[in-house]
Image (tube, rainbow over the protein chains, first blue to last red):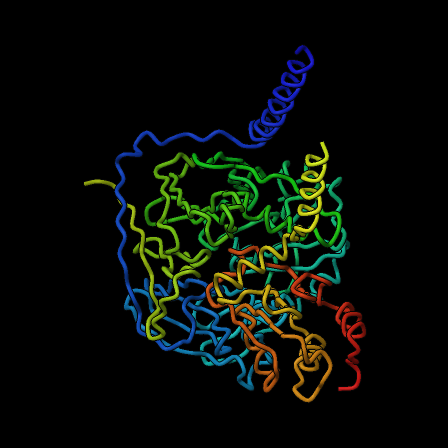
Length: 404
Length: 157
């Protein structure tokens, strides 16, 4: 009898320690979140729009938004047609298709499935219609205009050759999105052998005039160093092209905190942006052998995933989407990342929470969001939603406004 | 006492005969039963290749191997059913393997993952008498190893 009590006590003790440890990680690394005092002053509306087109794809994953002469343009990479497609979002109009196989450009062999990122347009940013900047396979930065004139090509390999540390410069529209900050192009630095004992800069600023590279003092957060980078598929730093002037906002896929770098004061401020449902920190996962790759998939499903932070200069708000952690087992079946609920959080400029809402299941495709003066656009083309009208590009616009 | 021993003996024998299915077998069996209306236990001898949806999973080497496996003129493994399950995002591979005796199943709605038949690499299964006999990953140099095991040469094509 005494032995039974001892075993029971031991089990309770173990489980208490297990949960206490998990909570202590969250207490240690996740900053507390405040609710905005005027959170009830805001209302949310959703408008559905469609733009006539004939582009063979349901949505763009690689795109940029250009605001020129007070009009908003979507410039998207169409892998199926190997083209750059341009839309006027305000007028709901397809404007132009730029064929990347034009003789004027030295682009060839693009992957039509867009799976092989070394043969893809990984990212786009535009200063104006005369200066559309493509990241081609993380190998070249190509600057072109809408007449397909190639204005400049910068080899990313030659840029890093002059650097002391062996690095590679990368950006992906859906992940670490390149953007202009203080007139320089911000890219992510990859290291061949990442040493989790020493902090190294992960942001590089590229001057397109002279191809000069400068490091920014931004590193991965304490938590990733603590777990020595063992966050499985969820270990990336993420950025958005929608930035507030003077400060650079970034975050990490693996935690709910949001960071802001101020180059004038050389300070980094960390804000809490906790979701109220589910985990706010990804569990660590170690990689031992090849079979473990399936454990990474389980880890991906059973942990949260935070997306980039979008600044809304028109309303002075921030938006951030995230996918909630769910159990992979679903009776005899398995849940996948497509079954994870998508949450939208809206913050004021102090990152106090204004709204947190779960979006309808199986409706929206992740990483298809962007901002214009109309509101927050998102594509209602979830992978499990098989309805596809090839003659329209569809968006829902989430509009947040103050009650009148 | 004798009767009790006999019952115990029978229980042990019957429980030993109930072969425990591996997780892969269970998942494949459920996927084929529910989504393809196919009872794998009735197919006897068969190969199943599950192509991963990942980038570059279907290399030229893998396609050569599948072409030989499904060659109609080839008598080798003529008593085997040959099935290739392929996610829709990699379905263009089918253009390279026409006129074969392989049954291709295109997973249009991401159902494979729901049934646990999701692999980060192409998976190769051989079933004998409806039991999983051999499993390996069909990627990089492993394609050569598997091809050699089944008497195919990837250099001759």
